[in-house]
Image (cartoon, rainbow, N blue to C red; front, side):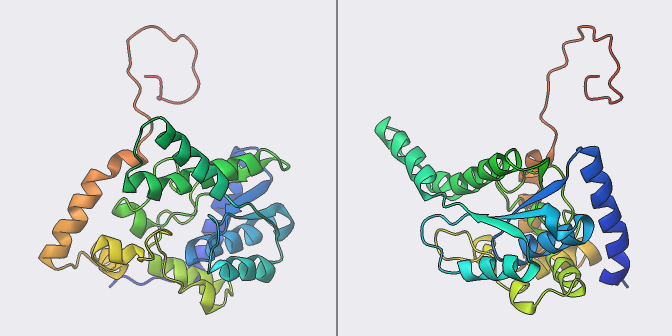
Length: 257
């Protein structure tokens, strides 16, 4: 029987985070703060790994965000430096320019554009603070079914919780001492008021049971498998055409082979 022990996981995870930051020649962890479990746990992990003085939280409402008190509460709880950057003008500016050029934004455009602008904002902050590195906040459950935006919330220098399910992320947060309010807020698409699970049509618990135990009803299994297959391109290195022309230098990887 599979058993998850958050306390046993933390030392290896935090050590890995320190190694990755060193590999990036970074110092300051830059984290987008939504107030939900993923960004809350990542921010808390970064405080453990790098010290809270080396963590920057970025709150990025799109206009008025009714639940921004979660984000404010989280950065206050952790005592980290933080900035609030409202992305509404940037989002609206792109949409207005599309319409001015006769391009009618689709629903997918309006859903994914804020995520991509938020990631651009995080990189702008990271490049404006001392040795800033953007930390990815995606979890395994969402990634498994492709519930993320390519070049949006799927981006970052490295992904500390990308191999942990939603329930495991909550357990890690509890072990780190985060209050329950930062671990149980249902994630939503930020546009329709629907939760991620509403949009998917099944709960993340079903995904977690399928991943860890292989248990799933046939109808949900088919949905999960279909979404998983259709979304793998989001997590692959950018395909490069190999033209067989010589590269005589060695860079220590097989990317150019």
